[in-house]
Image (cartoon, rainbow, N blue to C red; front, side, top):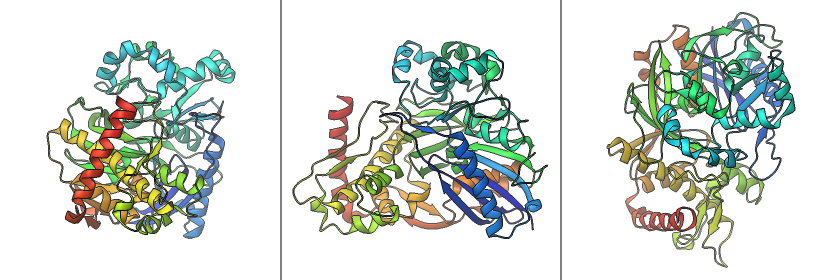
Length: 495
C-alpha cells in the first residue's frame, strides 16, 4: 500500500499525516508542539531548528506507529503557517528566529508607508500591515547583523515556512514557493503571480533573496540526504494553511466558503479566476494556481480564536485541557448570567474587517457573581462574534446571502461553539468527517500534483459529520449580544 505524506506546519505545532494514495482516506496523524518565543509584548518568534525537529519527530513517529515502510511514501504535500518569515543561508541554516505572523514589531514602519496603500492594495489585495511578510524581511535587513552579513556574501534566502521546509527536505536544492503563500508577502502582483519590482523597491527587498514562484501543484523537487525519509520522494503540492483547508473542504469551485478555527480563525470564499477587491476590510488572495492559471479568494482573518481558549487554559488556569472549556461554559446557571459579559479576544490586535494592529483584548461586564464558567462562555461567544464579523463582510462584498459555511480545525469539535456560531451568524455550520482539512488539503494538492487525482473527483471525497442550525430559542439572546458587541467595538476600537 502506498501513502501520501502531508506535513502541516502550524503556528503552535507540526502535524504529519498519512493518506491512503488509492482511496485518499485519512489514515492517521501525529502532532508535536514547539515553544512560542515572546521577546517582549507584541513580539512573537519561532526557532526554525525547533520547527525542523518537530517535522522530523512527527514523520518518524507516524511511520513507526503505523508500521509503514518509508519506501511506501508515494509523494509529499506541504502546508504551513503563511506570513511567518524565515531568513536562512545556502546550507539551510537559520540566521535568526522566524518572525511570526502575529508579531507587531513593524507597526511604525507600516505606518510610515501608508501613503502607498492604494498602490499596494491594487497590486497585492492586502493592506500595509505588520501581519504580512515584506515588513518582517525589511526588519531582518535593518536589525539583524547575521542577515546583513549573509546578504553581503550573496548567501541570504528569505521565505515563508513552506520554502524553508522544501529547501531542507530537498537537501538544500529546491528554493521555491507558490502563489497562495507568495500572495501573503506584500511583494507579489496578483495578476502576474510574480514578484513585483515596485513593491520590492518599496520594502527594500532584493529579488535575489526570494524563491521562485511556481504552480501550487507541481514538481517542487525530491527528498535528499534525510535521516528520516529515503531519497527520491517527490514533493508535488504546497498550499498555505488556509488555502489548504479550503481545498480539503472541496472548496476548489467558485462560491465555496469555509472557516478554519485554529490559533486564529480564517474564512475564505472562492471567487474564481477574476480578481475582486473588498470594500469591507477583507483581503484578496490566491487560493491556488493550476497550470499557470490563478484562482482567487476573499479572506477574512481573526488573529485569535483557539488561542483565546489556550489563554483561558494557560494564563487563568481554568482548565487543564482546551477541550474542557465546553463543559465548563455549559455549566453557567443561565444565559442571564452572561448577557452583559463581552470577551474581546484581540490579544494580537484586530484583523478583518477593522485592521487595528494595536488593539488589545478585554473582558467587559463582569459582576461579583461572574466566575470561570461565565468567562469561559463569553470566550466562546467572543470567538463566534469575531467570525460573524467576517461573515457579514463576506455577505456585503459577495452580494450573496451566505446561508451555510463549512468549518474545520481543532475547535470545531466544540458543539457549543458551533451552535453559537450558527445562531450568531444565522446560517448552517457544517462540520466534515475529517476536521484535519489543512493536512488533508495538502495531501490532495500532492495527489493533484502527482497526477493521481483529478479535480472533478475531489467533491466525491468530502463527507459531512454534523450540521448545526440556528437555534430559534437563542435568537433573542444572540441578537442582543451582537448589538452589545458592535457597540463596544465602535466605542473601544473604531471610535
